[in-house]
Length: 183
Image 1 (tube, rainbow, N blue to C red):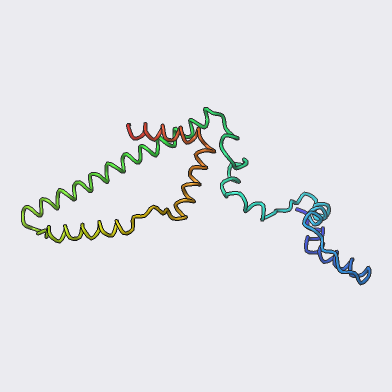
Image 2: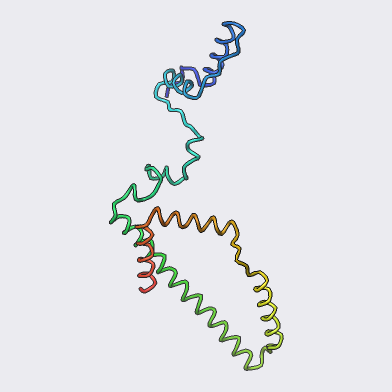
C-alpha cells in the first residue's frame, strides 16, 4: 500500500491554494470526476468508492457479484423454474407441517374446553357469548368499506410488479408450493 502520495483531502487544499494564489477570482471547486482522476493518478491503484451509487442497490446485490434486476435477465428458463420450484416446495412443506401443528393445537384446545365445560370445571355464559358476537358483527359492518388503504394498494402493486417481472420463478414457486403441501 502506497502512503507517499498526497491524500484526496490534500488535493482539495492544494487546488484551493493554487486558485487563490492566481488572482482574486472565486476558487474553483473540483468535481467528483476531477478528484477521482487526480487521486487515481497520484495514489496509483486505489479506487474511489461512490457511496451514493452503492446505496441505490439492495445490500444483497453485492453478495453475488451480479447486477440486481429481474431474474429473467440473469438465468435460463430451466434455472428459474428450478429455483422457484425448490423454494416453493420447501415453503409448502414447512407450511404444511406448521399448519398441522396449529390445527392440532386449536382443535385440542377446543376439545379440552368442551371437556372442561361438560365435566363442570368451567361454565360458559352462552348469552354473553351471543351478545359479544353481535357486537363484533356490528363493528365489522361499521369498519367494512370499499376503500382500501394506501399501504395495502402499494404492497399489492409491488407484488403484482414482482410477479410480472419474475413470471417463471413465481410459477415455479407456486407449483413447488403445491407439491410441498401435498408431500
